[in-house]
Image (cartoon, rainbow, N blue to C red; front, side, top):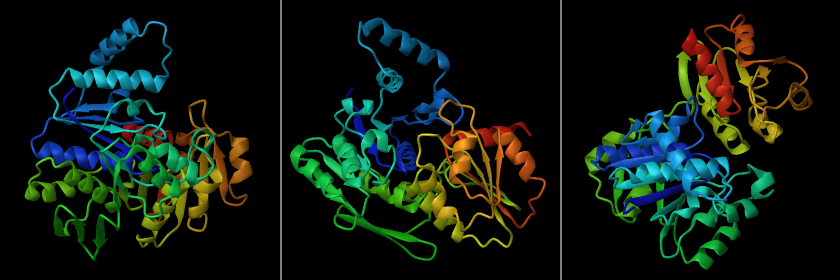
Length: 373
């Protein structure tokens, strides 16, 4: 493949960064492939070609072809899926391919590609059993996507020293926020100051502004030709299901896939920006291998009552586990998101807020319930 590759890593904001890159590039006339994970509803969401999903039969054919040539090699689920995505991309004449790192970076299946631009959105605590218990070790794993003599965009402001060590070892060219590029927000606008270009009075995006700035910075460092007017018009178009997605205003119902401390802190700040006269209720479900206490902690003083549920997967936290972590008072336990919502909707008023978060599965279950209605 002669395509230009972006690899997007980090603890949070990978999906929104990928979506912004994809939208600007498509609007600029490029043929674009996107590989992202996990999916909310259907497996085919993981690959897009020029903004569209592929029919299932194309995946089946890709899987069969990989299976026929892998010989005695044992492939993990994510390795199999990643190879299938790359095989699908090869069947199309793509100018640019965007790869979202699934977990970490160094050992991630996407790291078999020698990307032209690598991106690390931020470095938070997550997947500690695999990546390590502190930001030093996590940064080392995420920096594994750095490539020799290629540019790596860093959106993290508080950079662990281990990342610099990996950069020096790999001879990557770091482009760091507040050193090589920066952004600043005003009332209803923002600026991006970059070594390649200065943009002023940009529209506020529907996704986190920080991820928009990272995506645009990566575009400018890529030297791909981008029309300034098209770029500006593209910023406000991008939105992603389950990323601070407001589906109702009276009462407020907000969906967010936040599943670690970093994402929960961002969610708490966003909620504070909304003036709620009533109570805030949380419909919450999480995976058993997550640090659940760190996820709920940023929101513990905002949430009036917790409606917690197990999830329909093996990785779900049990009721017993949730009871050991969540507040004793004003916490109710259910066997499904459906039952939690049915109970909660009997008491909420138009002045209240319902926050649905904790995992991709929590959000997808709730959206499925609302769609059936």
